[in-house]
Length: 251
Image (cartoon, rainbow, N blue to C red; front, side):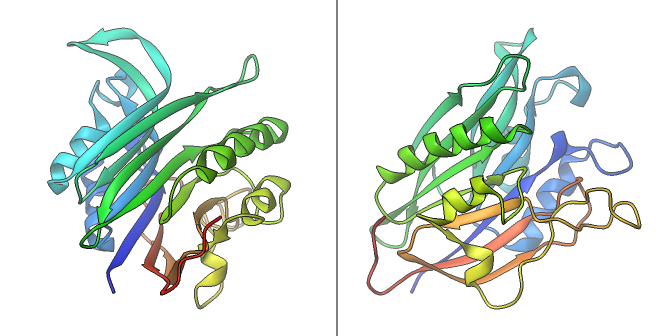
């Protein structure tokens, strides 16, 4: 049975806790985890604050992988032939067969959001569909965005997953909306779900809340889920080892 190791990682535009932009550390974290495909959040593309670099392309290049990027916001400057932006990305060991990105309707004055869908080969004849997103800080807006992502995900064939930074706790309405139709991989796999982010913790910087998720369709099984220990961002990566169930169940 073919396994797939899936990661979600909010990289904070490659900025380590000490303020240094270190894309090599991000790529190293992915490599050490043995991931096959990664959904990335807070990714810069040609923005001055991070050295005007195409971060998704550089991370994928360091790994010898493929990538896709979706801007949630675009910058004012033009660097080379490419418009600058900030958003989400997928880097993949396997070729990207299809990609679709969509900006989500945002409230006035709030940071724009988006989702990115890619299709990858999995196994000898199958495909894997991944949706990556980064939800905002307003709960009402998150609920609207979750409904759009649920509607989009419903039309995708198995096998599929939705990953990202939800900015919401497991008991929140927006996470419960997801788990009404999808499976929270961290709660299905053996062991207890681990925190991924530090929020007013003591001591400062100690992860104490879980806001980063891997949601899988019921036709998939999570053999193992763990949170990485590398502190190369203000979030910790979540890594899930997935397999297809013998009899897939559609949602």
